[in-house]
Image (cartoon, rainbow over all chains, first blue to last red; front, top):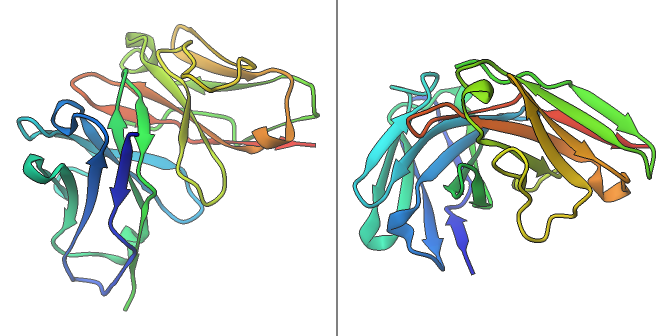
Length: 117
Length: 110
């Protein structure tokens, strides 16, 4: 069974750094792109970027380029999303999702990130 | 990359059909046959309902159908049921492994 399991909820202060994770199970992790999606409180889905585990090729939405870093460690089937300096406006649920047939066919359960002083 | 435009809400009675539009440009919807639709219930992760404009994943009821004309894609739910009440998002491939989501539509079943 294909599963994407994300790390747990985080509460951080503005200016702190953070790295959240997404671990794949039940499929050949290296051969499927993994994307990240933001959902701010009460708002819609926003596509942030995507990475290919086998060669770490990574693409970003212009809206998120320079704001976050997407990385992957294929040896442990895990993708990451990180911030170097969080802002209150980064408060959101972050989902990872596997790209299938030019869609996102499996999703993680989401990681709630709360940034508050 | 601007979000694709969807109506904020649509409403229907059980058994009726509703259609959700998703308008983009020639750089996204109009340029690729790679539109997908996602259903999201409150507090849950999104679930793919349609991919490649018209295809249904295994397990998705056949009352969900998709289409595209020019820069606009559509999702139709026929024979609306109470469990269909949710938020729906379209998503289009925009080239070089990048994507854009729609603004989202809340479907209410009366």
